[in-house]
Length: 240
Image (cartoon, rainbow, N blue to C red; front, side, top):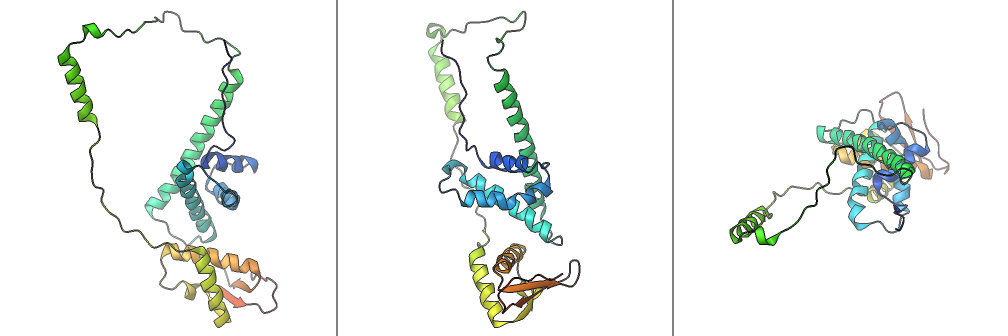
């Protein structure tokens, strides 16, 4: 009798990737740890040339939730909707459940084959049989009718207005041009009248430009407005 083996691929999905990043840093599964591994998660999926088509949407969903968590950690004044709060809590809950399942699977793998599977005492084994001769035509017709009635029917879903996509690359380009025209400006003036999503993209774009060293930023105090100035020297400087 051939030995039974369990084979799994190295690449299992977004939750598996996220859990491995958290365990690699020896962090607890909470909002803070999710914020810390966001960059690692985004770097991994950006370097992956080909993803399983069936799981691409899940990777994008997890990445969006991680960006939301990191944005709130960087901008404490950012207010989230109830749906966004629930998305963060749902990701934490799913990740914790996935960790338990992975551990259970590991335990089963360790004991598999080391002991025979034994039924409890008194358990009866029944041999189910299919006897077409005992089935009447009316019963077959009734079963077929029940099956047809259980089939899904076509239904039209309600349409929803989707907010326009704000590209991070376009935002970086727009801000870079604006900094050339204005030597000194504030983050508040840059985001005046912008939506919550646009404020987050503005902030992420500003961080990317700061990395390049063409501008530097300063802040007078906690939760104070961020002042941005052009840096002609060409080396990055950061304010208090």
